[in-house]
Length: 426
Picture 1 (cartoon, rainbow, N blue to C red):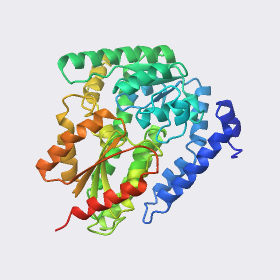
Picture 2: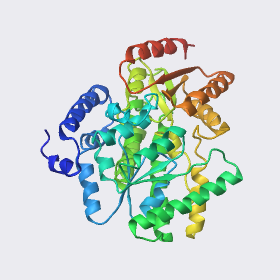
Picture 3: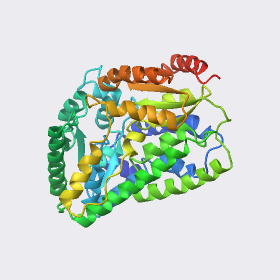
Picture 4: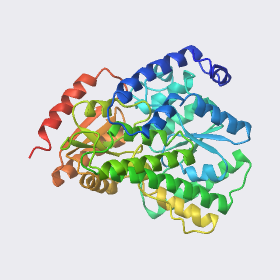
């Protein structure tokens, strides 16, 4: 048992023995998948430190913020405008998911054929394994799929939960609905924090989150270099940590890491040999510690050069306009920016197809692997549109549907290796 944080975890009502077992498994998993890599950037040492302390020092920081009067708000989805939370002095954090921990407990409430992401966040809460969820004064959910919106109804019995309605199209009426949802969410956070939304604080929050997006976009653009200067696993980890770490500290870290990456690119150095096959990963988000498929791909001899997902380009691609002066003007700008997200919840969703093709071209990908979580109908069904569009563009495509279990790693590896043999040959 790690005694350093035991009292804090106990105060958060975690199941100490189960939590210790979870951290032990995750630590071993992290060593095998991340620390075994060669040629990593020196700047990744900070990310390794964050992961070592993701349930320790970061949680202690959050508790100190709570003691200072700040409210902690958890979220799962890139549609929730973090800027509103920060402007109202809240602490914005991602929640635990990405593993099968707590599935047995979750299945007492949810059907077995529920998507793993939903079962995971539910299960982490019921099994008392997530110090982030336990720290939250409020969890903000959203209606991006039927499974989530119904699960939040049940989740609200265990944790204060607010559900933001996300439209299913990008019509004028849908935009009006989403703008109203911005006002409703603003009111809910104001009521929670006891603070009013001020234009100066909202402007600063918009600039801060934009700065983080710019840093991550800079990182994404550097991955177009040949040879690839950073592994897909490390790039994914950086995008994952963006949901947990302090936004100022994290942004400064990524900016320094990009400078190190630029030096590597200028020297023509890579983390893999030249002409290593390059893969764009597209589809569902990958929450910590869902590193299975990236590990399978990169241990098969390829390198991932981009993530077309909510833990990747979909989270960072578009910026919020910084031109508005009034609160209403800035809320309009937030509404416009968040409605540019090309989530599969929208119908139709042609922007996503365009973005996948553009990313594949710009990153010089040899092929696209589309990843859908089992029972995630929006992304699984939309994969046919992706396949057809990529076929028309002459871009090789592989569809993979999987969950969090490690039992299918060998069959996945066989499929990935077969795909790699067919692509990028001159």
